[in-house]
Structures are given as C-alpha cells and as structure tokens.
Length: 365
Ligand SMILES: Cc1ncc(COP(=O)(O)O)c(C=O)c1O
Image 1 (cartoon, rainbow, N blue to C red):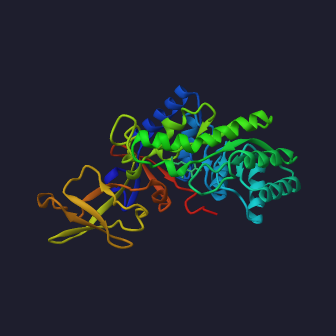
Image 2: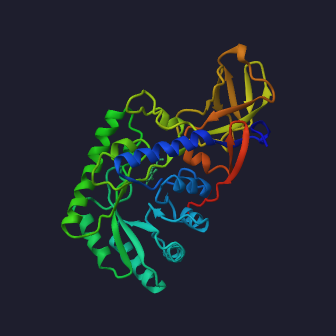
Image 3: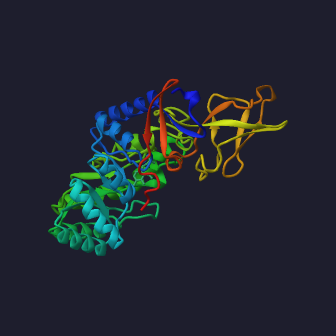
C-alpha cells in the first residue's frame, strides 16, 4: 500500500525522521552519561516502545497503570508508572502486573499509599519497586522535597514487600518555557530541591540508584544535573507544533528532533471562499491555542469546524485546494492526538512499511 491510498483522516509516522530522533536522543544520553526511559504516554504504542528499547532505552515510563498493562502484555519490560496508583482495585491490578513484569517501578507520594501497597504486595506475594515522587513545582503530584521526602523514603524502606529504588521529580511546568536559556533557569531552579533530596537520601543510606525526570523541552538541560540518573522525555520521538516553537539551544525553533507525526486529510468540499477537509475535533487534539499546520502546503490556514471537519481558509487564491486533494498537517500536541487513533501508518517515503496498533489508546485507567 502507498501513502496516497491510506483512508483519511489517518495518523502517519515518517520512519526516517522517527529513527533519526531515536538515534539523536540515544547519542545525547550516551554523551551525557545518562540512561533513558522514554515516556510512552506520548504514543501508547508497544511497537514504538520496542523501537525505543532497541535504540538503548531501559524500558518506558507509563502515565497510567492501564498503559503499563498493555506494554507488559506486549513484552515491554523496564516499566515505570509515573502516576500514583491509589484505588484498591488498581493496587490489586498492580500486584498482578508485577507478577508478570517484576522490574516494574511505581511512584508514591503519601504514607497511606505506601502502607496500602505494602499490604497488597505482601498478600499477593510480590515485591514492588518504588520511587518517591518529589514535588518540584507545578503543583501536581509529589511529596515536598527535603525532610518530608526523606521520611517517606524511610517508610518505604521499612516495608518488607517494597523495595526503594530512588526518586522521581518531573517539572512539567518547565517543559514548554519559551527560550532555551529561560527554560534552563526555570528547570534548574525546579530540580535543585530534588538534587538536595537525593543528597539527604544518600546521607541517610537510602538508595538513589534511580533518580528520574526530564521532558523533551529540558532533555539537554536536566542532563547537566550530576544527580539525575535517567531522562523520561517522551515527545522527542515524534515532536509536535507545541514543542517546535519553544526554541532550542542554538535555534529559534526546537529542531533537535524532527517532526515525524502528521495527520493526513482529504478535501471533501470546495466553495468560493473555503475548502473543507474530513479531519476535525476527532482527528486532532484541541488543547492548544494554535491550529494544525499544513505540511509544505502554502496558501491555506486550518480552522476547526466541528467533530468531523476542518475549514481551510484561503490565504493565497492561486493555491486553491482541489476536491479530493490530500493534505498533511502537523498536530499541535502529539500525546492526545495519538490517543484519538487505533493505529499509526508507518511510512518510508511513499511506501507503507507497517501499521502499528496504538494498543494502549484509551487506557487511562
Ligand atoms: C511524569 C512525566 N515524565 C515525563 C514527561 C515528558 O514528556 P514530554 O517529553 O512529552 O514532555 C511527562 C509528560 O507529561 C510526564 O508526565
């Protein structure tokens, strides 16, 4: 099958660009002495996770237990669940998952959760590997750095059914700070308390063999931290418009990684002042204040026009879209766009080389 035969709207992955992104990140972590456990929340696709592992990653991070279950079933190991697992039924699923994939790690930020996990693990006869999730700003999850984190680490290390491995600190509020220098200042300020907490753990004899963090926006910033052992960047493998515009170390746009993900749509209606494509709210995520951008197709601007449609406004009347024309767009935000599709079409130039299932799509449970 060829690129122009794929039914639209469809999610496309440019394999050459994707492979260069994996190679570029692998080279970066090698050069900076870090490990890589890329975040699979970006793609929710076991085939992509396996490619990342083949390129040297330790495994993948998962935002949710459901994602981790899908990855484990597909044979991916070295999983880190980066969101606390709290409901009793979910904890039971976690112990089952760890029976299958024993090197899975999970984060924790509350003493009650530590005790509940320890109880379930003991009852189910498994040992859970744990990271203390440290709040590094952004007011999301995480125990406060310093003494509260240390107390929680001690509690974990006292549980026979738990094994403390180290720390996680994810500064999501720094990932998209515009401009590399400003982002560096913000991320170092956010991550310094994590590094101080690491030093306290070491002084107390608690393990810090894993200290995880970092995003695509801070991949070449957080790797400057001597105490960080692994990066968990996610979007770098495919990129999106939101990340491209934040700026890189040397360039105005973040071009260290290539835009490998597109959505292809078909022009299904033409009028004097507009053309309509068959890709709307169900084809692109809409959580950003900028629209999808046509790839190498000047003369049009995309606007959302409902569940099933996008409206192309003509900015160059000499480049009027034709009925049936296929147009590719870069999505504003890759993670929630992946989550809209059952599969991604994997392309080498014009040729479809594979179709990968986005098997953990919808698995936010
Ligand atoms: C816990 C955690 N780690 C890492 C990431 C990095 O992902 P990205 O590189 O796509 O920003 C995310 C993204 O939201 C995250 O939630």
